[in-house]
Length: 495
Ligand SMILES: *[C@@H]1O[C@H](CO)[C@@H](O)[C@H](O)[C@H]1NC(C)=O
Ligand SMILES: *[C@@H]1O[C@H](CO)[C@@H](O)[C@H](O)[C@H]1NC(C)=O
Ligand SMILES: *[C@@H]1O[C@H](CO)[C@@H](O)[C@H](O)[C@H]1NC(C)=O
Ligand SMILES: *[C@@H]1O[C@H](CO)[C@@H](O)[C@H](O)[C@H]1NC(C)=O
Ligand SMILES: *[C@@H]1O[C@H](CO)[C@@H](O)[C@H](O)[C@H]1NC(C)=O
Ligand SMILES: *[C@@H]1O[C@H](CO)[C@@H](O)[C@H](O)[C@H]1NC(C)=O
Ligand SMILES: *[C@@H]1O[C@H](CO)[C@@H](O)[C@H](O)[C@H]1NC(C)=O
Ligand SMILES: *[C@@H]1O[C@H](CO)[C@@H](O)[C@H](O)[C@H]1NC(C)=O
Ligand SMILES: *[C@@H]1O[C@H](CO)[C@@H](O)[C@H](O)[C@H]1NC(C)=O
Image (cartoon, helix red, strand yellow):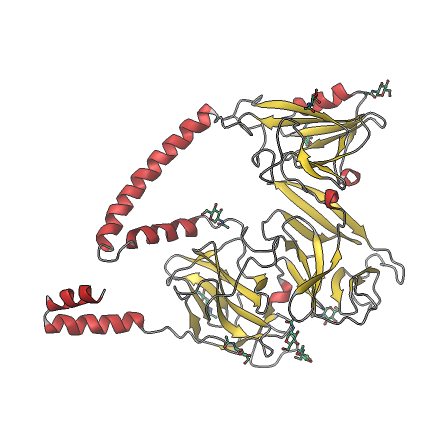
């Protein structure tokens, strides 16, 4: 490197050298990026640092427990996040569904609104406020206040939860928790908490419904909306606004014990809702909405089979449950004109049922054949389970997930498997389509590549890394990599 600079400078005239130096200083001058502030004033501006591996703190609460900063995801992507610093767990993301790119063109500014943007192309996220300062409270709540101290902040992150609630945070019927893989969500109904799976866009399957017990007080119709809250007295409560007595209490394990650690509740990537307390060094599981593994909405993944106490296998007894899945994850339906209607083969398995069948709609048919025919002729149906004793026919309008083994062989399952899934055979039409796409992409890559190579000739590998950044920015996708399945998958980066 040094010899390169030497040989390069020798060829330059003095004036050019001065110009070059000025340019270098200008380019490397830090933008007003001060790490670890206790308050962001108007005019604040920060850009991500290319040397940061995982997290770049910008604003820290008074205890140093929580920090607002840039979280690097998947190497090239960026989320504005509030992190629990000792465990490196993200508690809140500003832009979970529209990740920015980790590039010096991305910036966070506070001009009255907190804005995450690439000024040349787009705004990823904004609070749409006109206020004076940003603070981070010691409970992870990010707030924006006006100078004239109103009673309420102009904006707060507690009103826009991601997948986590902390103690005392109010969860109302206008909010949703969404698991970090985007598959599961939690919402409130008129008098219940419900969990939903989104196995197919546009079809939502409820898999858990907890109605308020109303033991201590009743929910009165038209007397105000209900909300849920993790109470520091160590339970998940459901309340009606205006009434401090909980209409429902779901006790944590530490309820009425001397344990005191900070509480949080998170919707995990497996669809479970788990409560934790902080014991000073780690998060300890303290509540589970679903305590039996087979009752999870997709305990063994796509086309899996869950046996109580005996783990996972596959619906297709010729397939081995090895890599954690039976068939590749499938999507869509059989209705599209591009794909032949009968582009599937049929898998049957008796002695199975759906883990959440009590919450499913069903039709009554006179025979298993009639139930199967209803599904076979309906292009949005992926499968059906018939109960011979009741005549109930349960149909699924999303790709088959996990079924549960029951002793009763008269519960009969019928499942469509898309042609090619599980076998390394590709649909011809799809193959041609992908081929053409690849050609177009290659030509584009070629043009951009030549162009960027010229621009970045002197910077080894410059053209390539720039192109990868572009790619990451164009396809944000759900932030799958966040470590909710495993608690330790995100490490703190350099500060
Ligand atoms: C940030 O500030 C807090 C409190 O002022 C301090 O405890 C913490 O160590 C600081 N963190 C960094 C990364 O400087
Ligand atoms: C702050 O900046 C954003 C993005 O540049 C802009 O849309 C917004 O109008 C600005 N807000 C104020 C209060 O100046
Ligand atoms: C958090 O801040 C509030 C007031 O802002 C204070 O009453 C409380 O004791 C603080 N909690 C901790 C754990 O520092
Ligand atoms: C939660 O809602 C209750 C009742 O509406 C209110 O008294 C309390 O201040 C709210 N808590 C937070 C953190 O907003
Ligand atoms: C917050 O900081 C205090 C003081 O350092 C500590 O006792 C407490 O356990 C921390 N809480 C969390 C949730 O990290
Ligand atoms: C697999 O299932 C089919 C149909 O249910 C059955 O006929 C066959 O014996 C099973 N094979 C094994 C190895 O269990
Ligand atoms: C299903 O139920 C009918 C009567 O309801 C009975 O005749 C038939 O044998 C049952 N089929 C199976 C497979 O158990
Ligand atoms: C096809 O199945 C879906 C979901 O199972 C259902 O909503 C729809 O009404 C069915 N269509 C017909 C024509 O039966
Ligand atoms: C992360 O990158 C991998 C491949 O590099 C890709 O398959 C995955 O979808 C990306 N995840 C997100 C959240 O973009």
